[in-house]
Image 1 (tube, rainbow, N blue to C red):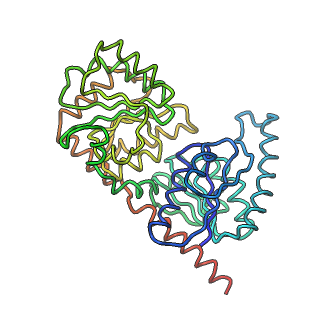
Image 2 (spheres, rainbow, N blue to C red):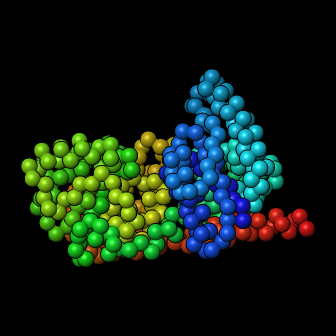
Image 3 (tube, one colour):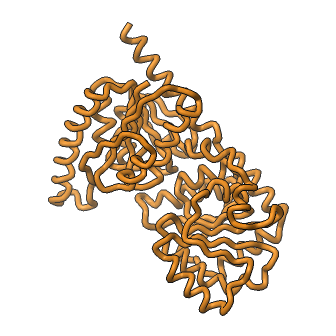
Length: 375
């Protein structure tokens, strides 16, 4: 099987694509991959590290001002991107092309559809991005992570609820290894607060404000992950705020084995990116979600609302976030074992650990359908 993957800009678009590649390997499917990404996104680093052949095209998104000079350049980049994509597709001869979002998917999936190659688009968020909405009129199948997104793809030939393939990748994460990596005992309760791989200023500010309030809560271990760019500053400010950092507060720049630590976590505090939510629902982790207000279509708030409506999470808007407001919600949840259990069950009910299997099944169906048409 020969597969082109495309998706870029942020990890939320890249990791689902890599999860599909990993699932092929897990199931013993012999597959050769080509990943087509943008020239400036995180995929330029992440994909080569995954030992997958990487090619790039120059593409940007549209500006809000419809008649801006930059939008004219974007149209030209799209046209050039389609030409380059067609060349790469003809050379690689894929059985299928899979897009997981981001501007770069536009020219690649469009080119594949025009060349008659089976195409599948995966949408991670509850509110679809403009690129995937555009591609839904050309792709053979649109797969979605949230059932709320199903009716938004009215132009699509086929829409399928699969969940996010990141859920499959974390379902067997080892809780004991997660605890051991933090140096914590087997019965430890963990509240994990994650500012994201690059950090999120509002979240790390709340960490500083919350730190002095945690000294009287020795029964719970608080793990604050600042992101590397903020670590030195935040650690120093927390030291100043508490004089001596309590033994139950662990401040880290990043966690390399996040799925294992998530498996050991009693309560997560973090953003509402689609891949993160796929992981915590696969593991049944209760959460307090603080959606980023700085994303397209405010899609993180829609993602968080989906979990809140199901009873799997609490949502705290960034404008209401402070150390005190956060600790108040944490205390209420951590002091009520029944509520945590209910949230965990609701989270698990939303989980889609079979997601990568479903996507692989659909890929194989599309390829078989194409071969049957040739005969």
